[in-house]
Amino acid sequence: MKRALISVSDKNGIVPFAEQLVELGVEIISTGGTKAAFEQAGVPVTGIEAVTEFPEMLDGRVKTLHPAIHGGLLARRDTAEHMEAIAAHDIKPIDLVIVNLYPFQETIQKPGVTLEEAIENIDIGGPSMLRSAAKNYAAVTVVVDTADYDTVLTELKEHGATTFETRQRFAAKVFRHTAAYDALIAEYLTDITGEAFPEKVTFTYNRKQVLRYGENPHQDAAFYTEPRAVENSISAAKQLHGKELSYNNIRDADAALKIASEFTEPVAVAVKHMNPCGVGVGENIEEAYLKAYEADETSIFGGIVALNKEVDANTAEHMSKIFLEIIIAPSFSEEAFAILAKKKNIRLLTVPFAGSVEGFEKTSVNGGLLIQASDSLVEDTASYEVVTAKQPTEAEMKALLAQWKIVKHVKSNAIVVGSDKQTLGIGAGQMNRIGSAMIALNQAGEKAKGAVLASDAFFPMDDTVEAAAKAGITAIIQPGGSIKDKESIAMADKYGISMVLTHVRHFKH
Image 1: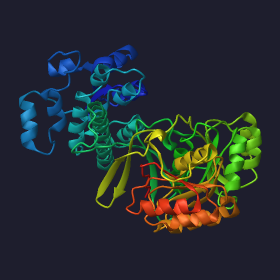
Image 2: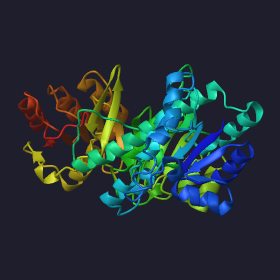
Image 3: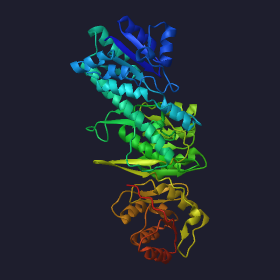
């Protein structure tokens, strides 16, 4: 290894790395700020303009896009014609490339960043050098990750060169890196144009954690996060205590966060297998948790609980009495944390709870990907329609609106029975609506008397309305839109209960 080209935005560790390369007899070629850093540290360095015999121009936009650079990177060492061609043009091979790119992601995450600033942080020369070097990894070592500096030095000291396996592995990393970089730029510019569903989509994610396993022990899994992940998400959560999150923990926590984010008043949401098993609303977070616990004292065991206000000592004492996998909240008081942290395995996470987040949901299918806007519609309650002779009371309407927020997060077919303060029965994921209704009503039992019922989609028949009325339900909220709406309305009138149509459906498969 005779020549190295180094041009980095992230200069952590680059000077001592270059010093050791020089000790190994490697000539350093460099550009701009990297070259200045080497000169300041006393590292022998050759400027890029001395190699290209062409000055940097266009405010540095053009400096490495030159045959003297790319010829030295792309020439195949095992092909005589290639070596003769570069020799004829006095181009010397480059054996090692150390490049990391302009900080585009960091730039667009800054508050108030302008489009001009973002554009100027799109790197062109860097990816070009990386791709050229990576294409020719049979002969060229290319490094894009500062964590790989030690590997390069170790192999150079031990063997005088890097191994083929290392060069191949680094090349693969480079193409992942440049692909992710370009994907982020494409996503950013596409967002600006407002094109929701372009002809091609490219997404990039960063690995956050390799998981012990997926849904089941025989399934391998890992957790990846979006570079621009929103704060109010499980991907941005801070873990304060407990063992690592599992695949199922992450999915359940995501579901709990989405429900809790629907409320501004203190709320506690208990989730099992991505469905709520108890939701409680209170004057304070302690009352909210107790309501959620009382909603289903059996199912909450081993569940995930999300609370949208700080956890205080009293609430922590209640929660410490049962086994919970995860507790998510904006914060924990010192006393609450001390109480809960006595349990070794419980995971304590913080998320800022900034409200529901608009965006797009991605669902994989074999051979493809489904993309849809998230179900974050802000509904106009003034457009809701009371279609029965009996009008809901103010208290019933408050309860209907609370349960309507919850039913949209329950797997279809979804029926939720409850009051304005808590869920009393939840029927999820049945193949027919009456099946979900009977589960919810049976769970509510005697508490169904005087409660309300929410349905995520219309009633195909009037049987659910009749079952609800016989159980003591006094008001129903549902989208409407069935060809048999009149039968369901007539059934409600028969039993003297009120029915509100939202004209909005909330299927969740």
